[in-house]
Image 1 (spheres, rainbow, N blue to C red):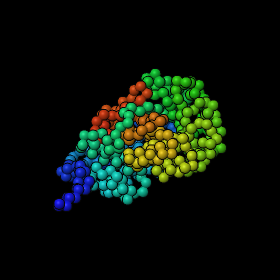
Image 2 (image 1 turned 90 degrees about the vertical axis):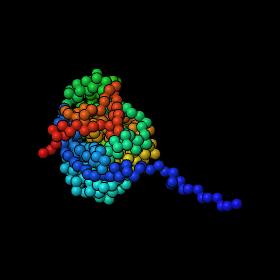
Image 3 (image 1 turned 120 degrees about the horizontal axis):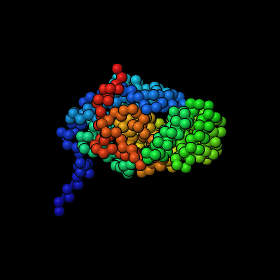
Image 4 (image 1 turned 120 degrees about the vertical axis):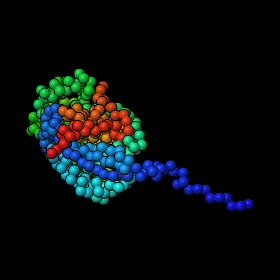
Length: 394
């Protein structure tokens, strides 16, 4: 009997993208544009206040001519993190784009490795680039970006609204309008810009006015020391506040762990968690009940999901954070959130509604207290070039 022919290796059975299409997925060029879009009202945080939101719009053109879009958002310069729209554009143009041009746009992890080799951190810039790549490849293959991220567990997301004018009378009126329109029933109150006693008085007014009809979340944006936070968190528990975000500086995760042990209101980590290593440190210390997931922190849609995986393994709940993105950046977040098995606290991607003018042809849909995942390939949104030209920084 003759010898049996050896079986072909499994590698032969892998379905590959045809060579001609693979060549079409080569990245031809990347362009960046800074835009400044007025907001419908003042947005006041502990460290800054804005009346216009700034973005870097990234466009990635493939060899097939398809253009993918991404967005990096920042609040009032390098106050929230070390990045600003000016630095994001400069670093993409000088360092990050040259590292990608000519590469296969569909190799998303390889692209991430190239970007990490080209520049440290610059997470918002990197996230905008990967969003543009996924948008371009998704449009080419006629599939949504979530198809590259494990598929969609959900296509609608509970969405909150942020109250951040600092004027409680105006904020009550604003919240009442959102409730009446069935747009939002959870509200995040930005505090820390005023003295703690003023913040507590403002929260008391909101809690009394909105009562059981709404859920209140508080974000101190790192404004307090541990003693102040402890005192205020006891007061907030009495007011029925559901969740408190980042009351202490990002570095003080041990302080966050002590607060969590001494207070009944759950803690949400935001600025403390940029990387998977940060998430692991927070989890090991028991410093948070939930984590805010943001592309500007996690450097890519896939990076966001990796941070979420560490959190899930540690029993830390997930919250979809934002930095006032337009429908471009919000759509990118929703593509990543869609693949998460749980998003216990919903998301806060109300950004398109706070802008006087969105940057896409068809903005995201908000109804019945939810935001809806856009239909269509890639990110599911189309750039409105007339608005980009209108708001582009000269």
